[in-house]
Image (cartoon, rainbow, N blue to C red; front, side):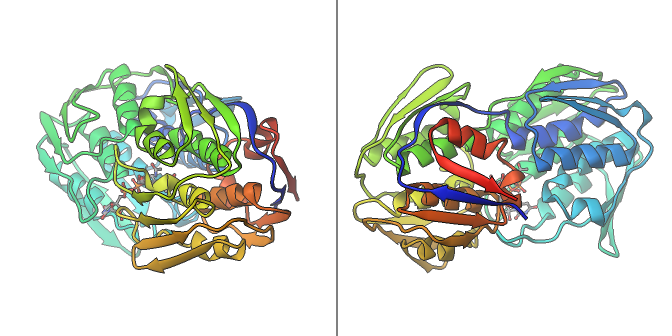
Length: 419
Ligand code: EPU
């Protein structure tokens, strides 16, 4: 198993270019099977998760070729509609194939994804939405079994206990493109990745409006065609580099990103006292030796993203004063707290709220990554700490950050991968 060895204490400097968004790539690759024609997708990050999606599509019978950051998916020979446990259990996000599969094949047999370290992660909204569209759903021996003669457009309310759901919205949206009649998705997720998916679907001939709001309308069509599409930049990767620079008192510019996707983060960085400038597709951050504590609450978009909560926490361990972080999306997503404390942070937990008492210094030690974003937080803390930090189990990180250590090294970080 690989690990990172980090020599901390060097402020990040320079510029870095972000990759295409993982969380746009996955539902868009899945949606490519809605047509029988080949689709070309550019700016796909080479990650364990996108490669897993390619493997699942291949298992279903599609031909998938990955060349640099371009994926060609030819779903003309799709023959299977079953996704077995061995594949689904390696990537929870494979659930976003449910809608495209049922729309394309009229049936689906899909292993139920379990919980994960960030919480229980139910799928009731996915199932409720699909059954509203006319899919008969049973749960048999740990598998979701769905079938439908004709999907029919209807109003679907997708609000849950924690607000909207990104991948449930993706599933209902994709299935509705080939339904008979009009579908109205109420309480749809507003995330930029859903906007990207809607734009992709439109480029295939789908009739979608309202994406980016809580009300998405879909007018079903008989057929979709192949397309060529370039993915949006990864806003979470962008935020991770900004927070790494901020935590080390560095000064960086992130290129080929979309500042408007990250207002909640940029606002907080400014509130902490840092200098942020932005252009159409870049963000520059000038760090400081000291910064103010913050109160953070995670929300669905456009609120502060849960996927940056751990990285923000790493930054706040060194703030002046006491910060609070409240998780409103995944109340249990705090597995990184113990490891950050091992690096010298002072964080206590009270249910879904963390209190982060700023300390003067972090000290390098050996820590273990537990999930994708928690791993990034440990790397940020290691970069800011005095001495050497070893982050083990970085296979989590390889799921979601393309060439992470290489990009950090161009920012003068002292980080190396040890096999
Ligand atoms: N929820 C339900 N019922 C459902 C579905 C979700 O109650 O049927 C709840 C969840 O338990 C959670 C909340 O709704 O409390 C939001 O979950 P959501 O469904 O939006 O999450 P997701 O679509 O499964 C995507 C991202 C996650 C990201 C969340 C929230 C992808 C592939 N994954 O997951 O990304 O944290 O949205 O923004 O798009 C990551 O990249 O590290 C990651 C975990």
